[in-house]
Length: 178
Image (cartoon, rainbow, N blue to C red; front, side, top):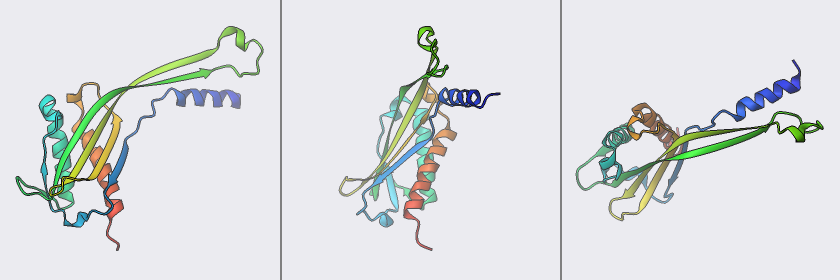
């Protein structure tokens, strides 16, 4: 088989594959002393009323990640307040590929381009931590990934994986020197 043909087939295969992956972002107040944070309290999220199953999964996963780091939830007088925001959106990707090399004369007369449209549902989860005394935002973690179009079918495993990755970013940034 001709190497050029193999290369074209490989490019077409890759171009038509959705390239969504778990993306995480971390931002925080570099002057804030996170070592003093031992307790936290949840503030109400709008997702709680509209999608209680998703709310329970997110709260459970965040509670677990914070517990692994020695933090505990309290009913009053916390060090920080935690809340989250979640949404989904439709994301289209359009790939147009010319299947005939451009140097061929008859190419422009016969319209050999192929267009593939992919539609993916992308979910975004933003977790905020604000200092309890000043109410100033001190930490924000954002996670994006492809999700099921029905929010109640977003798996606990997907949420847990996203928060584990965010937690690893945090640990890498604030790992104590050995």
